[in-house]
Structure formats: structure tokens, C-alpha cells
Length: 267
Ligand code: FES
Image (cartoon, rainbow, N blue to C red):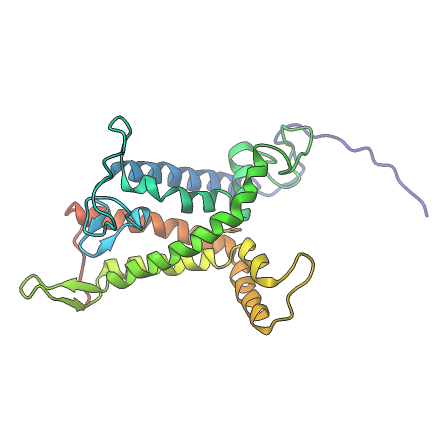
């Protein structure tokens, strides 16, 4: 069989023979994730205007300690050092944040967008060797599975928040009655999108599917595997839609709580 020797030429950073706009995706990823990270950090540090009546911002749910009526265990714990900034979000936001940061899809996206490793497929990169995620610090990305366990629990908290957002206090009778406001729809849509993202996780797929090299023969587990696989096929879409919606939910509750927006009651 004839062989042709083609020398491998190392490309310089950003060099490519691609003619399409390969830079567009990493650029939008950089802008989208960057904007979300800045907003989420700002919102978490506010420690205020995160609840409006029965609505609770997902950045603050569950509110373990805090001043709103949603708090589980009362106000800020006395042992919290006075020199340390305080916000109820600090106690919980690390879990969904860690889940997203270590997500298989986001990893691929932000490695390209934030440190060009590589900038895109078949585009020259800075690094000369390939180490994968086998050494520090990227080996820590393997904690994703444990963040997934927590993220699944959070979906139940958010579903409970969406349910609570359907009960409005009548100021005259003091009784809560069923109703739907725009905020109810926002928080419900947020729960559905985050659920679609979380239940389509690659780690969950492996967990429900079976063993290391084979799929379980149990019909229930096969069904679960199919369901997670179905969501997993659109994981990127779920990831972006849920990212937008969780940020928008916080904006919505925040602006309603400040009296800038008025929550429209649909019925
Ligand atoms: Fe994306 Fe687990 S792989 S959430």
C-alpha cells in the first residue's frame, strides 16, 4: 500500500485554514458567560431585594438564613464574622455555580472562549502539549458528579418555590388564594428550564444508565437512560436557556421588590 508522508506543521496561535467565522461561537460564549458571571456576582452580593411576596429569586433559594419570610432558620447567624460581607446567597450559590462551572458542555465552551485552548477546532493554540484533565487543577472538574447530586435537590426546592408563587395573600382576609401572576410564569419557566438542563446531565446519564461499559438490563433503568439521553441531546440549548432564565428570574423579582416593575396578576 503506498504511503505519503505529510509533515505535521504546528500552527501559531489563531492560525487556521478555516474560512468560516469560527471565532463567532467563542466570542458569543465569552460575552454571554462573562455577562452572567458579572451579574450573578453582583446580585449575590446585594443581599437585598431578592424576594417579593411569595416570589423568591432562584439565586437565593433555598434561603437558609435571612431576613425575608422565606428564611428557613431565621436571620443571619450570630457567629457570622462582622468583617465578612454577608448575603443569604453565599450559603447556597456555590452548589449550582459549581455544577455549571464543571459541566462537560460548559467546559468545552469556556476553554475555547476564555483561554483559547484551543480557540476552536483546527485553529492554532498557544499550548504546545496536551495534558487533558488528568492533572491539577483541571482534574478537579471530576467533582461534577457530586455537584450533580446537589443540583438535583435544588430542582425540588425551585419547584416548591414555583408552587408557592401560585398562592397570593389576600390582604383583606389574610387567606392565601390560588392565582397566577407573571412572576409565577417566570419562576415556573425557570424551574422547567433548569430541570431540563440538570436532568440531561452527562453524569446523571452515566449514573442511571448502568455500569462502566454496559447499559443496565433493568427496564426501569433503560427507560431512565432514554429520558436523560433525550434531554442530553439538547444539553447546550438547555444550558443557555436556563442560564438566561435564572438570571432573568432574579432581575424580575428584584425589580418587582424595588417597585420598578409591577407584577401583573393574570387571574
Ligand atoms: Fe452539563 Fe452535567 S454535563 S450539567
